[in-house]
Image (cartoon, rainbow, N blue to C red; front, side):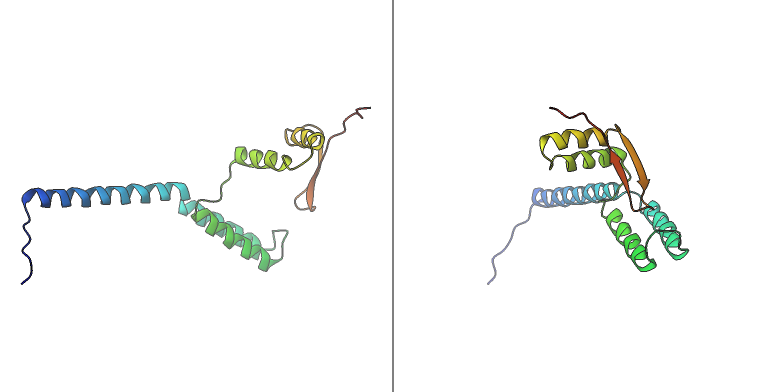
Amino acid sequence: MPAKRNFSLSTFIDCKAIRQLALALFISGASLAAVAAGNPQDANARYQAERAACLNGQSNQARETCLREAGAALQESKRGHLSDNPEADQKNALLRCNALPADDRDACQRRIAGEGTATGSVLDGGVLRELTVPDRK
């Protein structure tokens, strides 16, 4: 014969409170994920604009490559891994300088900070940043 279970009002209230807490945590987590991912409408609008540029030949890439990159950017944006944050770009550029020897690192950081000259463009194949420093002899 199966054992009898006794459920009291306090047990029911405890279960209800736990369910409400779990639901609240789920909703807050989902909200945070939505905020981190950014506005999906903005991401979709950007994708449509990038796709149109690919199809019109206005990008500097082959059509197939351009469409693949636009799709990848959309996916990363939806995951919250893509942003247009100039401060983050600057920080990333400075982090790349850290891999260089000390003298080169200093010159790299100065170039990123805007010292020296910058020539070229993405359409031309890249931006060349140049800083002339005196010899330390």
